[in-house]
Amino acid sequence: MSQRDHHSARPLSPHLQIWRWGPHMLVSILHRVSGSAMALVGLPLLVWFLGALASGPEAFATFTFWMGSPIGLVVLFGLSWAFFNHMMSGLRHFVLDIGAGYDLDVNRFWSIASPVIGVLLTLALWSYLLFAKGA
Ligand code: HEM
Image 1 (cartoon, rainbow, N blue to C red):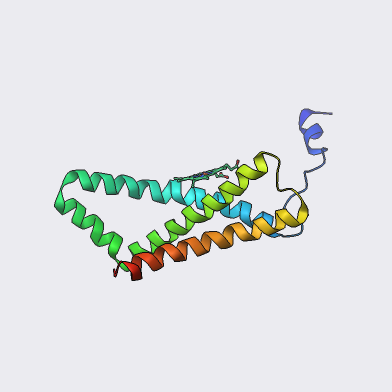
Image 2 (cartoon, helix red, strand yellow):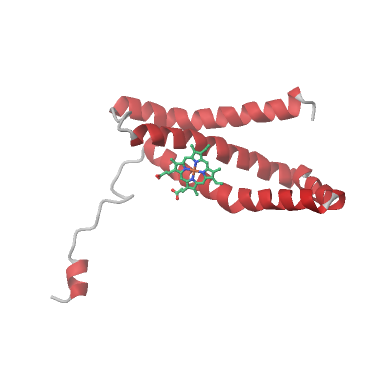
């Protein structure tokens, strides 16, 4: 048997088509999506912000113009959701990493509560920004 045949004869590990969908799968996927969004979109914007800040009032005005535009606000809203969602599922991750929270009902509860709390924190932040500060 060639090495190739040997590999293809191995059983495949159970994958997406095998498991029944549940909130624990969603929270895991959202963790990766939100972490990647912050890294790929958020960090370049942070670099732009710092660069504009260091380059003077004109560059900073360009930055605030774009970030204050409807598309900029949608991006910032999305990034704030990504942060809070990732923070909540990351904190859940730390708890699971110490071996706690694996009882089925507890696990299910937090896999639903984490993203829900992430959304609530996002809405709380924007309510504050838009209404409390009168933006
Ligand atoms: C609120 C603070 C944060 C917490 C508690 C947190 C927690 C975590 C944890 C526990 C993991 C590992 C998950 C695993 O082992 O599968 C992780 C992965 C990751 N984090 Fe964070 N994180 C935070 C903030 C951030 C920020 C600010 C960024 C980006 C700028 C980020 C980007 C990522 C990325 C890209 C991954 C890998 C995701 C993957 O490929 O599955 N995180 N985070």
